[in-house]
Length: 57
Image (cartoon, rainbow, N blue to C red; front, side, top):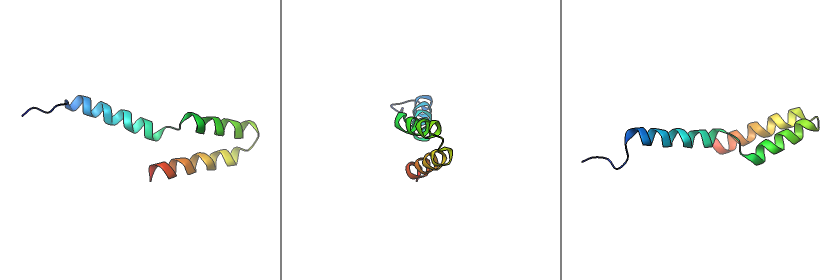
């Protein structure tokens, strides 16, 4: 029996899902840029790190 979706298509879908999970969304990018512009570099780093840990675990 032949699979409904080819292995290449499944691999491409898995790669696309991984990229979506590992990259920050537009709101996170906005918050980091705003904090950096206000001179709060440390807070921007901690916020980005927290978001990555929160959504990956």
